[in-house]
Every structure is written in C-alpha cells, then in structure tokens.
Image 1 (cartoon, rainbow, N blue to C red):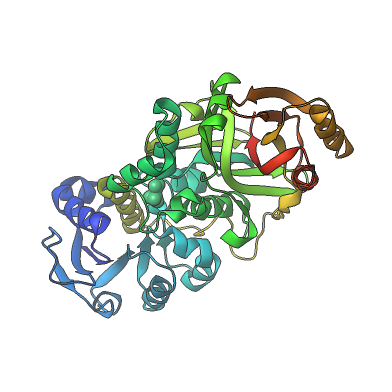
Image 2: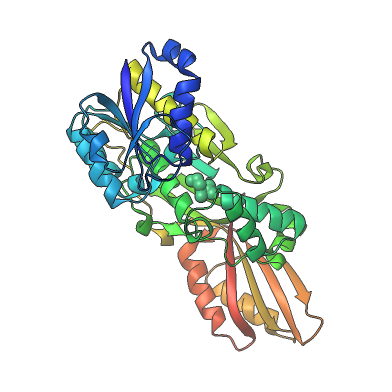
Length: 420
Ligand code: HSE
C-alpha cells in the first residue's frame, strides 16, 4: 500500500482524494499497489472540503509523516510551496505538483534537489491534457521543431466570445471569472503570464532551456479591439493567445502573445475554455493534443497519472535532459524573433500620408503584405491596418517608434504577430 498526503485540499485536492477513493479498483490494478490518500493540509479547517481524509492546518503533518511516500502539492504560490517541496524531497518523499508558477521559477533547482527521487508535474501544464508525458516519453525520439499551443482557458474563452459574439472585454472577463477558470488575479491570465509558466515548463523538456518568465516575450490580450477582430476575419485569420517555442537558426524562440493564425488551422478551431497544444518533432511530424486545461477532475486526472507512474517505478530525469547533459540550445534574444506582423494605427485622411508611412517602413526593409483603410464616420481620420512579410522583431519595434513620431499618426500603434 502507498499512502499519499495532499498539501492544499481545494477543488483539485478534493478531486484527487475522491478519485483515489472511487476509482480505487482500477488504480490498484494499474499501479500494482493500493493507493490511499491519508491526509491533507488546508489553511482554514472550518470549511467543508467534501473529503473523508484527515485534515490538518500544519503542512509539516504531511511533509514529516513517515507513513506518507508521495506528497501532492496543490497549494499555489511560489516560495512557500518551494520550501515544502524541498523539505519533502529531503525527507525522501516523491512529489507530485500541479504548481506551474513554482516550476516556472524553481524547476532546475528542484530537479537538482530531487536527484533520483521522482518529482512529477503533469497537471502543471494544460490541466488534463497529458502533454508532459507526451514530451518526456512519447516524443523522446525526436528533435522538437516547435511547440505551439493555447495554454490558457480563460483568455481562449474571452477571445472566442469577443470574436464569435462581439462580446465586450470587461463583460467577458467577469463571466470567465465566474466560470472558475481564471487565476485569483486574472492579470495572470489576460497578461499572458499563466501561459508563459506553462510554455517554460514545456520548453525545458523539449530544449533544456533554463529561462524565467522575465526572460521571454510575454504580451496579453488587453489591447485587442473589435477592429482587430474584424480585420482578422476579413483576412482569414483567428486570434489566439499562443505560447510558442520554436527552434530557429541561432536559438530557441520562446514567446507568449495574441497571434493571428490561419482560420483553417486546427488550433484556430479550438474554442471556449479548451486548451490545445501542437508539437512538431523532426521524425514524427505534427502531433496535436486537446482537452480541458483546468477544472477539478481534469487536473486531478493528471495528478493521479503521476502518482500511478511513481508507484509503478517509472523514473527518468524530471526535465528533458539528464543532469550534466545539455541540448546545446539557448534562448534566442527577443529582438531576433522573426515573424509576420499586423499593425493598426490612426492617421490623417489626406494625401501623402500613406506614402510617408511606407517610406519609413522601407527604411527598415519592412515589406507590406496586405492593407486595409477604414474611414471614420465622424472626423477626417482613418484607421490603417497592415500586415507585413516576415521581418525581425527589432526592426518592427524600431519602425513603430519612428512612425509614432510622424505628425500624421495619432495615439498608439498596435502590433500583433502573425503565424502562418
Ligand atoms: N487560469 C488558468 C486557465 C487555469 O485559465 O487556463 C489553468 O492553469
């Protein structure tokens, strides 16, 4: 028999305890041993958690319990769970965590501390989708060319509603919070940070890149308007908040941002709170994974998969590479990212304006691919919307700065990246 302890018995923790009980027969058959949730830790003992396991408000009751072999960390936060996971590993206990923020900041230190003790984290990325297992095991024969995915359900729900129903940003944010998918502070969702944590975890397995969220390009969905949505529709694109990891000539691009993608692509059809990840391997080609990215039972399903894997004795490096061996790949500086761009700006509706803008773009060797001009009803200004051929991030950023200085352009210039 293997006993587990749960740090954080919220929605996911309660689902873990309940599934271990209700599906005990198949889990024992699959793992080869009985798995029992012995105890859990909560902050507030007076709240009913809907579980039959013993509860305490002292994490040490789990972390130092000699009977507990596997500690499941579902607390959230970074530094407190880090200290507890570290202590559990030092006590020789295997750990399963769903905590993406913890791993975004401390995965390499934890890998070091864990050594040969299992530390698993399937539930940290894309909830119930077994994407960690796919990358660590199923695709291990491949050089990974790219990972591209919808890794945040809240923003996908918001974008779907904005695009399909013309819903307003603030209304739809409130609605998605009520659905229970959003982070406690929804800035983590709409600002792209939640997705960046997940992308960094995947990039560690695929490329061995030890980057922190601060090191990579992260943009949220806050500046998207109906104008952008309508342009995307007219030119055959969907807008999705994507996490992208891509092997380029001189390094690996890691970025999270709203992206225009062809409406015909599979990922463009992933709507609502669902997540999806496409992984391209050099041998297998494109593979695609789809499912619930959050929610009690879906996330618990991934947590329990790790528990069973540990009980079965599956080991291997926590991240993609054995200690001391490296991929030889490094993070590509943001300025060297290369893609297509969409630009939106408000300009005077008079002769010579278009020429002035294209003259500046030409100086940066930026070539326009398509263009749309939308007159205002009320004044003598127009909205200009461009897409460009592929160019480097540094050049588009510099060009935007120069364009902002032109007298004929008003307010912000909004830029969105396009992936073909
Ligand atoms: N806030 C996250 C989302 C939950 O919306 O996808 C899962 O990490």
